[in-house]
Image 1 (tube, rainbow, N blue to C red):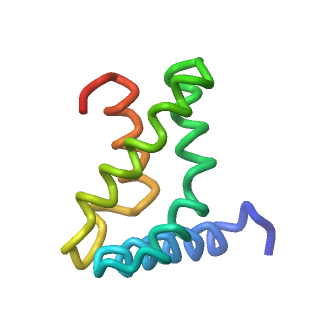
Image 2 (cartoon, rainbow, N blue to C red):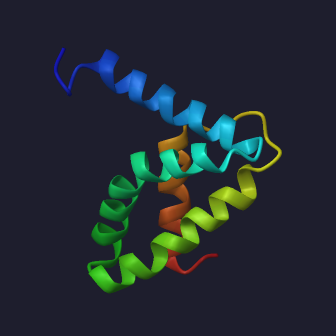
Length: 97
């Protein structure tokens, strides 16, 4: 399989969602893994929206803090994890926190 194979992509997305479910139970290690798996893509979204690396850097932490707070106590992410993070990133980039 290649990295562009839809099956591989779906598997990665499922893995990200599984990490969020574990994080919802308070598993900090799972949230760290989730961050490591998604932060480069979320940063790229922020950079494309803001056009300023320092602004993207500054927003990244707040996005993951919000995700941690909103995910706790849930049994599943509100939508696929990466889509959810992208929505949070768009909102933060617009200044709608």
